[in-house]
Length: 526
Image (cartoon, rainbow, N blue to C red):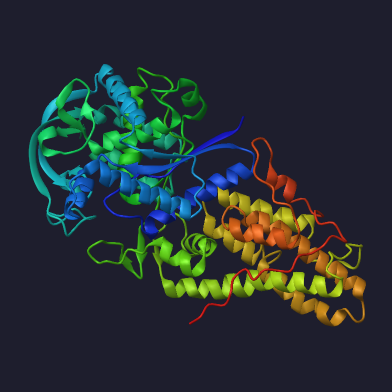
């Protein structure tokens, strides 16, 4: 059985989700949908990190005192947001769960048995924003570059340490021998330099007297496991580590960890070093196959910040434009892996040009003309001069190959630009609209109705195929198009490649009824 295990980061619940969190999660959701349509058995996990002092501080700032009530409410807010955005996760993990506690305890004991956990005294700087200790090389002008408005804390305390430096060479070799492990290439080069020059032993606990949350160190209740050492293990928890061995063997290693570039040192250096250590005791603890780090996300040119008050609630965008528009814009506007900006002005432009005038207009024109000229039916596909056929099996195969390749390399922007712009300016939505203008079926119907039937059948069939290519990114829109074509909805099934089945040319049956076309993207009021 073909499987895919895809993860997003787990987020602190010190605030509600914003558009940057949605970007990562929607991207992972697209991949999960792609693999399901190909017949894979998919495990897709999202979740929240509740073992963080940030959460306690946020609770206190709101004037609350019951941490469990706060965590339950905020975790519910995150889960509901992903449900509202149509995220098709299989597992929503909370790091306060009993299953996660078992996984963390089990992993800690394996690392300890390997001889790579030791006691020591940490003296240095600590960033509350990152919840991470900072070395001199990670500080600029006595500030954390990621949180320049927060004072670094000077800390001296007894901790447990992880002997990460023991795995420097093994980690360097793995990254160099497996170029797909850290992507994109710019991030891989960054990690190679970091591991080579700065990878040191990590403090992996803090004294319990300084914290109000956290999992106790096994056998030492005076210490709490450091947030990152705990949080990273969530990926194992979801796969069944420590609780369900058969499940774990099925799903681990993860196929993809999707993260932001601000946390790649933890995911691409600390995490694989932890796994290499524990693997000495449990050979099933292989390294994940790929970690992909996307860029920073800004809004109108500014980094998203609570202090700036510029965080955008994705619910507000969906309320005006719809879920599919949000998904389209985030993945079309930003080259995945690079920094990107969210702008309402650009969203409006994309909505009007790409969605309303190109995709929506094409679907409405083709179905309306077919209904008008052929008594509400799908016209005949009798052979005719090739100039009257838009696309065909070759065209769809060409489009599909290009789009699926972009899905596999996580270039969602290129997948969408291919669907809209075609391959070598052929077989795209723009060209389909041009084909209508050039063949003018609304004029030709008086002279050669058979030719118009061929034109419209090829366009209807093209629209049907394109709807399947759009299904992972714009599922609601794709389903509306198929409904207008009177196509029965088909759900992904394990072992069945729906992409291959549905992208066979000739799926529409001439003479079948056509429904009244729905306005896919209504004109917005100014």
